[in-house]
Length: 116
Image 1: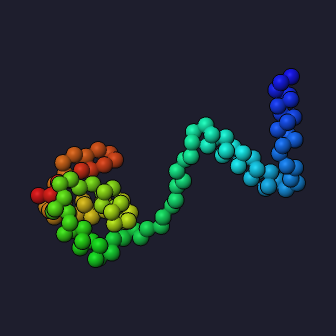
Image 2: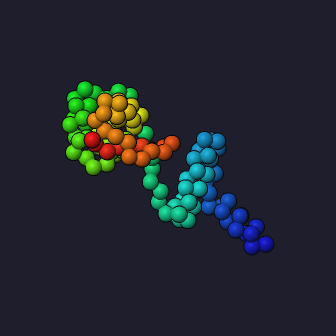
Image 3: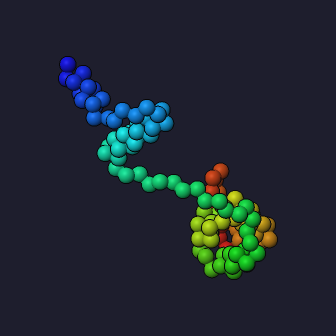
């Protein structure tokens, strides 16, 4: 009985909207409020569009900075210069072939380099 009364009260509280899109939005907002109460606010994700190639000036800066670094990872450099991680990985592999850096440790996901 208590459950039925609770459902009836919720139905009375929610506004009656004819549009299906509006109903979906209301349902989503209600679900978000419940999740916020349960888990707290969650960080939102924003997608950035980045150039797949490294501009020449930034590449020169990276090549000058790498010998000064103790440990080199693609994620650190990509975050600093706001460049795609895949482009930095290619640059680091080229520099490894040139002999300017050497690989300290590697796994299937991350490669750690050290300047020579």
